[in-house]
Length: 435
Ligand SMILES: Cc1cc2nc3c(=O)[nH]c(=O)nc-3n(C[C@H](O)[C@H](O)[C@H](O)COP(=O)(O)OP(=O)(O)OC[C@H]3O[C@@H](n4cnc5c(N)ncnc54)[C@H](O)[C@@H]3O)c2cc1C
Image 1 (cartoon, protein in one colour):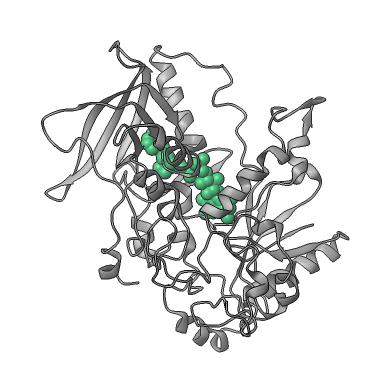
Image 2 (cartoon, helix red, strand yellow):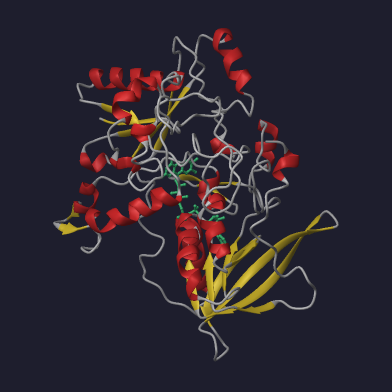
């Protein structure tokens, strides 16, 4: 994907408040943010409103394949700071919790690993001081149809190789709802339907990824050292591995097959990652939602206009003569959805509470946790792991294999479920296991 090709992607969002005339706007519904929470709401609510009456307000800028940083220097420039408020990577470093979130249209989906795992049913049975932690009506079985819908929308796949042939022939519950589900038995060169990757290789021709094998080895050693039982499997990921190659996806967006470059966490320049700009956001737009980027909501309060319930204060940012300009906006609406992420939404609520127009629970902003997620590195492996993104050139990877027999590092993402006395490891876009 070149930048020239990237410019052919139709923009989903526009700017608001760039004209000197007005700084007051009225809409029926406003969705703040554009990560998973907000985009799903925008897509599902938009059919209930006339065209242009449901709007999405996103503080970051729009990124399409080709817009993301490719080199380390570009990535450093993409940090969000007071001088660069439109930077993609928003690091929040505090005394006891460091957080990375994305600042862009599509939220975390732009920079995350895209692993789409449904929580274990036992999550919803957790108790604290004898009382259920989750609302009683929220159970795994209630959520099952929605998991299917999400897998379908995010077009979840798994990176299968020839070792997986036996597994692929069975229906996989982690793919239930995805387009791949039920097609696996046909993924055979002798049948009419063959699933091939970007190299044109079928599952029978595909070799296991080096990092996947290292992951398996590392996890098995760790489990045996700690006398734990382990289970390793391929992770379901929202990445177009075998479906579209230059064709349009279900929402009419052109996609290309993943070339295993490993750049998912700095943003997919290939158009292979199924970020929200590939699915829920185009769906919301097609259903009449208007999407505005570079608009940061600062405060909310009850409206001073009888026809509207809420008054939103926001800052619009845009370039004028190569200079970043800011403009204060006032937006009125009747339905307000705050989907600005855990930190973004709380910031808006806490700021609004400080103005005395709004009152919220005293517990707002307290007891935050990082879901026990942690990132870990292992080193000094005897084989090259291919853990670090190498850009668009797959050739670079194949050349590096013989040159770098000692892996510099190997990234594992340790994640939650500690309360179940289990540890979930997942390696970026590749494997996961429970120990
Ligand atoms: C590097 C990385 C890897 C990850 N890997 C995985 C993974 O593999 N699998 C997984 O399930 N999860 C993963 N996650 C976590 C996942 O991405 C988040 O849980 C998810 O994005 C949260 O969705 P959200 O809608 O709550 O918030 P976000 O996705 O953070 O979206 C919030 C949006 O609101 C915008 N916003 C914030 N404040 C304002 C404001 N005042 N006005 C307007 N807009 C605002 C933000 O710019 C952002 O676009 C990963 C996260 C990171 C950072």
